[in-house]
Length: 205
Image (cartoon, rainbow, N blue to C red; front, side, top):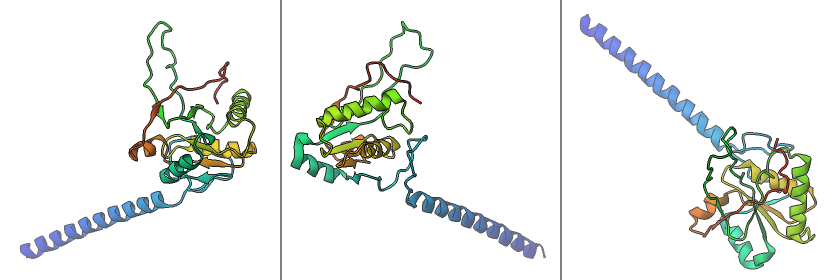
């Protein structure tokens, strides 16, 4: 009897363990399926949580792989306007004015213009006007010039900036979702960047 009871207990424990393993496996499979599911485009702009999975498409623009961007640059060269929208580092709030602050350098694709914060979901009137002015200057008023926006992988700011430029009437707008990290991973060169900021930096929502 004792052996039978022990066997039943062992069988029960084995069943519980198997059930637990099955549950964990099902949860993992569900999480994997959710992470692999396509991300839909929002009706407007992404307003927060900018470092998150992004859609495979962008309204009003094309999506470029690293190979496609290399080909575009080889064919059209300086006619292509590369716009980096990675946010610029900000001096920590509360830091004493006399304290030294040395943000890490930022590198981007050679020939790029770094316009930080223009990919936020909501722009102040001053920042939006400045963004429009920068695009007009860079394009020479030619709204058919190729414009390519990027930041980092899984970065909604470049998605927002691409869609916003299209809303301004630019007709040859592209999004490079792999961004700086994708370019680096392909063994392609980067250059140290300097951010352009408005003469009177507008407030950022």
